[in-house]
Image (cartoon, rainbow, N blue to C red):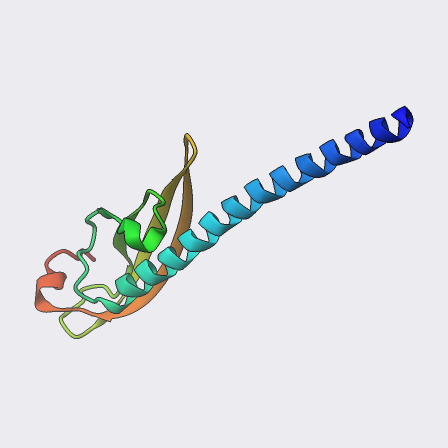
Length: 132
């Protein structure tokens, strides 16, 4: 009886340890999945807005109502990746969009980087900033 109780105690302790680590992993993956969805939404906004400032770092925080209480923010920078020499208004330029989403997990700050490119038509105010 004592041997059976000892074996049962060891088995229960092992099962409890497995459940504990599974719960921690599920919470970590839930946060990561939430951050990936937030990154997708923010990147789509940057890709769709041709008036995003070029060569200016932008950052912000996500509303805690959509992050599930997770402290989460973003940092983005749009730069010109390629342009024609002596570009004029109406010409095309290739923008590089770098986005980093950050969130806190316990005492650690984690990040998720994204990068994308888009084609944009130059406006007269854009041409002044380009050099051949």
